[in-house]
Image: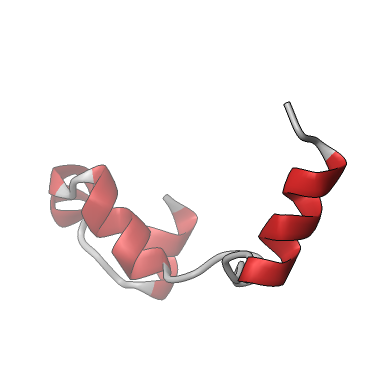
Length: 51
């Protein structure tokens, strides 16, 4: 709420009408950006955990 009402300067009416997806888009990325595994890393995991 603090971010929506403070930083984004949304009215309470607009804030409460946002969908979770809209709010997540407004918040932007949080935490580190995760890069998908490359083929070599996937092969290493498959060799390590063959089941």
